Length: 254
Image 1: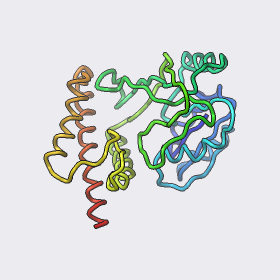
Image 2: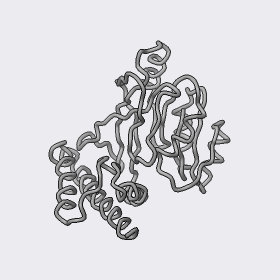
Image 3: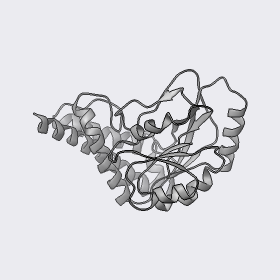
């Protein structure tokens, strides 16, 4: 089990209970000040200190090498493994499957309710053989690169993604700042894993409108009521802020 942690003390107890089936748990702490690190250690977790400020994927990569055999499940502290998923994971990995990795479906609990539409019915590559996967440096929201066959499990991870709008905006500010340098340098990255747009109003407005349309209309976010509308609007704002910070970074370097 591998995770990255930053000031998530209120999540530790239920997270530890959720991952108690793991033979070994390694967490990279990148600067917690609220007692998260100490509580993890008290719970029998191996905690590795990494420099603060890095993106989650880079932080995870720094501890993947600590697990050299068996299977690795990557699970953030705001994510949980329900019993049906635990049983499916244990069954699949003990059968010596041909796959080297598995995508896990996710269910998202956002702003105090389940979001079932608007692109929240996704899956992420989080379970893989040790030594067969790695995260690309500097790529926020990126999936790890895996050698060999990839499968998909049936049961879902439960993700307590954003307990409040304040928390969403806080994370948006941190993540967009982290992706700004890569986008400014012309690299693929950010929310939609693409290169930065030209510094002109129309492409930015179109991109933000596209995010809203895809989330709220095309993917049925309207079915989640006002919560679906709020989330789609915030994600459209995320796209705009991301482009603005990339532009700011380029201008500062000029």
